[in-house]
Length: 348
Image 1 (tube, rainbow, N blue to C red):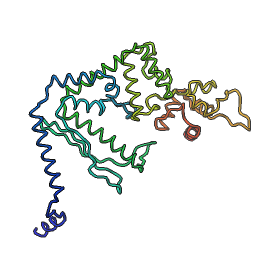
Image 2 (image 1 turned 45 degrees about the vertical axis):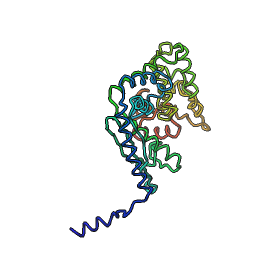
Image 3 (image 1 turned 135 degrees about the vertical axis):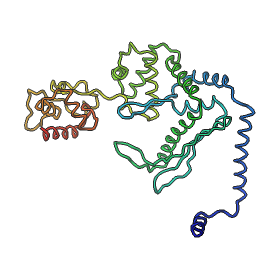
Image 4 (image 1 turned 30 degrees about the horizontal axis):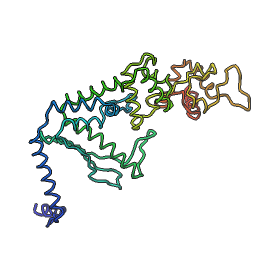
């Protein structure tokens, strides 16, 4: 037993002396905590003042436009209050300290140990989250390592901001958070004072700059632009801000129109996106057989193979999505269609 105790004591050597700089920092840290608690209790928060400050902040488009995030998950989208709203809630509530710290970076294992915390100094409640952030990202359906120092920094900052948001929300009362969300949504619905027609035109122009047409916006919202209201414009604004912050991709939020088997057989792939139509030749009509120098178009071959299996256009698209893991047939490249055609012929 004595040998084990001696080994444990020897494994973690204890410092025999503390330097002057270390002692000063330790004393300063203790004094800062004591001073923060003393000041918070000398000047306690006022609930009415906190609500007034929150109402003033959430009534501005500067905060409301970035108060929510949105990102894809499991074929849908997850939406909620952002770190920007969380920090403004903490500021309005008062007597709260928060932060994110990188405790350790391990370049050998390519990961960082980080900590996010929020402390209600007046109530003396503290929420701490310690977590590991791998120096990697998930892209193209696989994990890719991050090698650039800036990429590692941004990855750590993004993960830290998400944990900090949760730490702040764990410290604040639920009714205060819900009130802030509702106020921001009301501001988004009201807009910046312009008529609804001008806001609709502005939203269409912004998304057209991203390559999203008005038809795709109407398909996303489920109604014609003449029927859009303030809530619809607010949803588009949240989506636009999420795309700018790279939380969600344009293709995930606004999938391109699908080319159906019937349209291919008619030789009219007009519903396909412009980039897909430019990437492949127009489908040859079925009654015009290909020459020996020019092989039959892949879309016609897929359509004929689907007919041979007794599939209608919806079933052919479902089979393609199931075979490809969820991809749409419309924008599929030629190589993928060739593989799908081989799959159909083998399983016929």
